[in-house]
Image 1 (cartoon, each protein chain N blue to C red):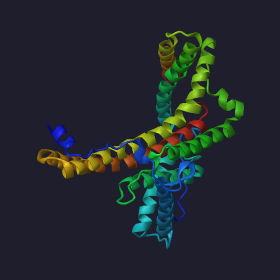
Image 2: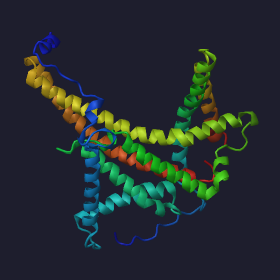
Image 3: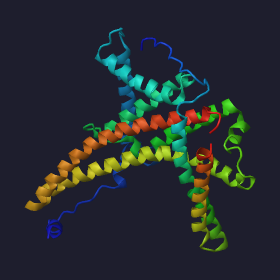
Image 4: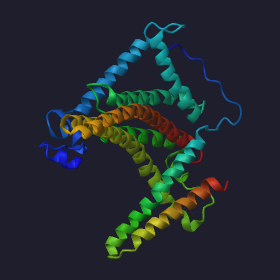
Length: 78
Length: 262
């Protein structure tokens, strides 16, 4: 590899991370998976513990709601 | 009618499945040397040779090998590294991104190279090992930049209602520690596994139909082989794309860990 010239520094905020938008998009996707997974799983465990059957769906829906809220709060409000 | 004709032939067709991907060559059990092990060693040898050949006798006006090496390196360095991580910090991650990209793309494309014909990443341990490596790297640089407690504290966005903080924190924690590395590994694994299965099904099934079927079945078998060819072309696209996406996501995770706010 010949020695490469140093990359030009873009003008503007030096702390700016250009990949941040892509990062947020992929992170939102990960939230949507995590919410139902975590709280659905928690509901499933509690169902097994208490011998009930309704906590798994409550956990999945609640987790999804929490995910959506978090995405809205993080990326939608400011 | 056609199914009956196949059944009365006497031989049965076994559709490809998970067992087809376990191919121990030397030894058996957990420490067997499998076809995937051989393929990945072969890929490392090939990459080393290509890169050494491409960087030997370098000139300002590059020959073909040098040009190909430079284009690939440029794609990862500028297209992934600089565009995603930013011009200030990207350079120290480029060797890692370039290594990941080369290793994955060669192993993926090996899936359609005659005689090799095995996608290493269809054994989940390989993409999992790569994802664990990426996982350690992006948390490590995040902790180094923000401090141990600062890094985890930055997970919770400021201004959140207090009652929700513990629930959101668990959600953020699982996203960071579980969902992102697992999806990174499973995306690569799933694409390679399913793609290879499809190819084996279309080509192996087509071959079987031509050998054992009645006339109508033989014609359908030719159609199946044609579909196998189309899928092979499509798979090459997927293989290159998945190598790129894995590298891109690695860069995105690093960019996120370096950012002040997650």
